[in-house]
Image (spheres, rainbow, N blue to C red):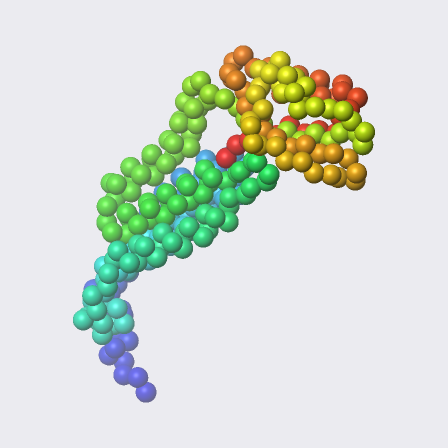
Length: 246
């Protein structure tokens, strides 16, 4: 029968103080993770407050326990000298797999890059909390929130070019040429991106897929006007215009 003394060590003042300190750090990680993830929840993303809170808390837990190595296994591992840098490396690698799962590529459109980057940043917030850099963790969490909100609005006000993924389905017998298509796009202020073309057949109908870029955001016509002209073409039976974003 195991003696009572080793079990009592886990309820001594030193162990309780360490657990309380770790618990406070986890609570802070929960709040910071929720704060960073709220922007994703507000914009209807798949990864929301719960995901960010879990990532931040797990990163904190896996980092902070390294600093209490003398208390591991009831103090029996007092000779252990863990390498915190290897723990951080493992955390970053593991979070990388989670980030890869939220990135989706559909043709020429890639979505989830901002969510993946912010999840990775949330793990860094947890690591800073775990090693005790509380001010830096608060600053990083605040900068992450600003980069996903304020910077997004600044980006929209600066000169830029909008990109669209265009898919066209033609009649079985069609004499549509690339030059005519490019001229139609340029008339509305768009340029067909060279090398973005893909050709396929769907139910014996030719299907063209390519990317167009607005020459100037303020001078290009709305995609609705471009869609109206495509709909009036006798050669095109079906089309789609989807904004390319991340």
